[in-house]
Length: 102
Image 1: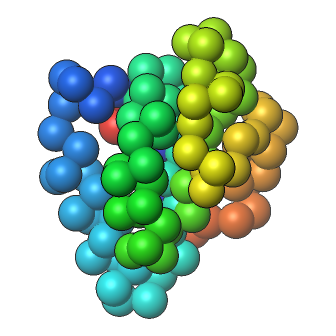
Image 2 (image 1 turned 60 degrees about the vertical axis):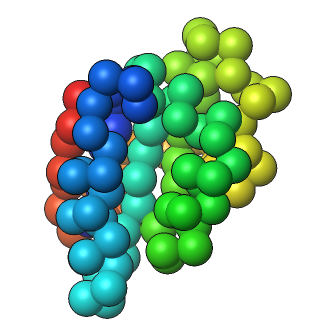
């Protein structure tokens, strides 16, 4: 499952959507979370990134959105920065389903 986050961590309930991801990983599913739009802001938090990685989730960020927000040097190093082409590959080839919260 690929979770697509687009909302700022300040205006939404990340716990609810991430709970779905954590439960899926616990059941043995391959789960990744890609951050687009304002959700990229959350990737500045080492605590947030560690929580995702420690739970077994792959963590991605869309490069164009990170650059647009001036975050490239502030994002946790455990996050894989991807371009649009790679995002399409994630959707089409890497994950079985999508949960979108944008």
